[in-house]
Image 1 (cartoon, rainbow, N blue to C red):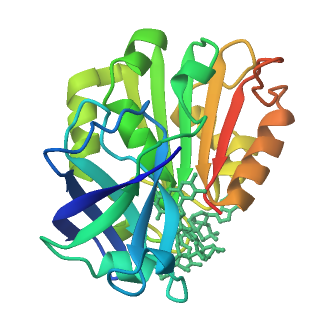
Image 2: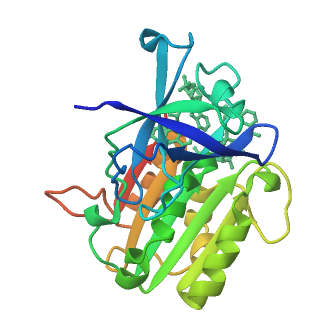
Length: 254
Ligand SMILES: Cc1cc2nc3c(=O)[nH]c(=O)nc-3n(C[C@H](O)[C@H](O)[C@H](O)COP(=O)(O)OP(=O)(O)OC[C@H]3O[C@@H](n4cnc5c(N)ncnc54)[C@H](O)[C@@H]3O)c2cc1C
Ligand SMILES: NC(=O)c1ccc[n+]([C@@H]2O[C@H](COP(=O)([O-])OP(=O)(O)OC[C@H]3O[C@@H](n4cnc5c(N)ncnc54)[C@H](OP(=O)(O)O)[C@@H]3O)[C@@H](O)[C@H]2O)c1
């Protein structure tokens, strides 16, 4: 059974007008929130203060690794959305609710081994990968780890300091491949990921793609997940299922 834990905002970092990250502490008497990197938890606010019947909850992926006691979430304001605009307005000391049962299958324990681990994201879909990248498991299990992040604009390529730290720590074992689709930005690939799989630009920036060597995790916009999956299936990869292991493991954010 899931219950609700009260969390307190330590920091609300605004990256752009619509992108924000919340750092949240649980009360000292709360049980630790155990999860595997890549999982999510439901976050909620009461539309009417003090009325649990008015609670609005949505899943959010952990950005922090499991060993970090401060929780972190990365969000976008969906202007008409019932929750995200209110989360974005929270300030230091404000409270929110967290479900006590993190879950989700976008985790390395669900993946077969491979030579390269590809972490493919759009927008806020980078969140679970930032958690995974700060555990030991990907570096122990895969020869190379490639983080692909696609955004509309260059300013939405967030967490660059954290990514630079991973580059320093892991050297050639790590590759970061940013995409920007709605402006030209130096040091990034143009357009969308599926086109770059089909025309060879993604492999040129990362590594060859083949069923014997590649493991892909996809997260974010469901249209991207569908289109990248189709491009990978054309290359002989298939969905990873418990009964029939494959190379494509996905999570849709809506
Ligand atoms: C497993 C899972 C994990 C998730 N993790 C995150 C996360 O880490 N960060 C995050 O910001 N969101 C995440 N989401 C989405 C999140 O749960 C909410 O949908 C989002 O915060 C918007 O909430 P809302 O109530 O304002 O609008 P909603 O009513 O939930 O959504 C309205 C519409 O907004 C669009 N939308 C929703 N989420 C996004 C998004 N993330 N990026 C772009 N467009 C979106 C879709 O078109 C959707 O139909 C996750 C969703 C799932 C299923
Ligand atoms: N990002 C913002 O500045 C912003 C501002 C205000 C509100 N929002 C809210 O957030 C929502 C979208 O946010 P977002 O920018 O994070 O997400 P997004 O629309 O998913 O765009 C992120 C990246 O994914 C790409 N993409 C979209 N569909 C794809 C597909 N089928 N295959 C491959 N790549 C695909 C986009 O390319 P294309 O550019 O080619 O589509 C873009 O590079 C909006 O609907 C709005 O509610 C966002």
